[in-house]
Length: 174
Length: 181
Image 1: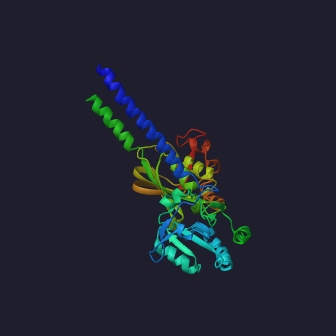
Image 2: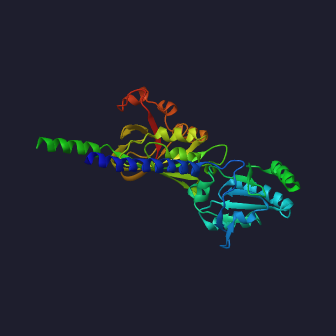
């Protein structure tokens, strides 16, 4: 008799464990996967240079370039020059850049912003690849950027220079 | 008593084995910025004897800590970096040494591995010491040329023991790591 009584609860526990196991696999997988074209951009809320929290979602209605970089990343610094030109051209036309730095040291980041004369939105999630934002967005190389439309949908990745300019023209005329 | 003696002999022979590498500093190079990719980091973390990997941005290097009492197969680090699409610029290994006799241009066994010291005076290594691997594909091609001029032995070019190394008790064909202090 006792054997039967014992059997049921264990079975229930097993089921629960299995369920949690599959759930965790699902979420772990989700956390690692890179967002895809067509996905809605997950919100990012991080501090700016002055310490105010800037929300990516507050830019809804604008076309946004979400850009991941760090001051120590040479190619990112070169890319900043290109972005400055693009921002000068399209900044007043419903386009914004939201840059997320993965610098570990806030000082390095602030210095780089000044040196590169960056005037667009800048936030920081200090600590490199392991930071929650880098993990959530599946960032494995710098620079990485996403182009987001007015509705908050991801429409392209890693566009730069002429390609970015062409995409922006099309989106702004829409 | 016999058992105790046996235990002591084993204990002594283990400690006199020379050294245990505990950590490493690795610089990767490539056509693109090695630190700007997480690929090297991830690949090193997957190596069986690696405990932790940290990016040292200021020095453009990776600080690797090895699992304690685990055999460190140095070639595995090189393979990991190469599989990630980069190559090693420098690899410096740090370990704790006890009474390890070394001589310039001579071979010595550290743990299970053979080492060939390219420079430094004849000495006995004790305490924490760092060695830099000077083998092909562990340094830039230019540096390799510089390092390899330090010895006439053919093992420098191949990384494998040849007749030159047999007098030091190393079988032909065994892997020999060339190091500088």
